[in-house]
Length: 166
Picture 1 (cartoon, rainbow, N blue to C red):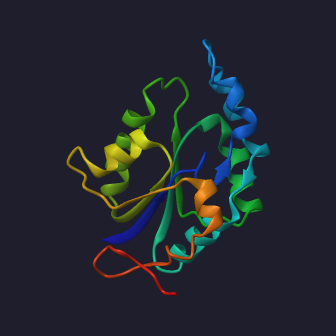
Picture 2: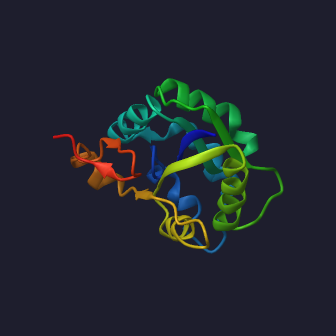
Picture 3: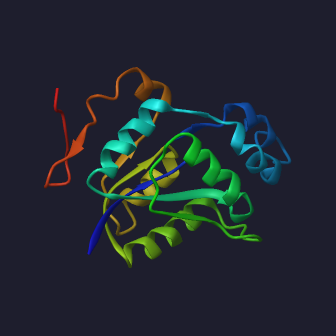
């Protein structure tokens, strides 16, 4: 079975800060939030980390973004040289929670891949990946902290542990 690393986009590879006001209110506008995704600034060090993993594993993107934003998302990934073997997105009309959505995506990915690592920023999703029978290794991204010093997270060893190559 092929091996992969699952990677989130918003808050992990990209900085959605400029559009957070659209969802941090009583009536979140998720469509507008996702429609502006192409304006996100990248987290270059996180992208570099993912690129390193791509030398050994397939990179699978699992994102809460709508399928209707696939073109913009692919363009953003290409513009910022993010490796991506496959991308799973929210289907139109799907109003499930992010946790339910990503668990369904995980089930699909695991039918084709052995998941070596998940890179994710959402605490709730990290908990789901680590628990609920999955027991996956998860690198929780706090992008601002990772921007300062990510060299510690270089490669996966054969025991599914991150090792320091400094």
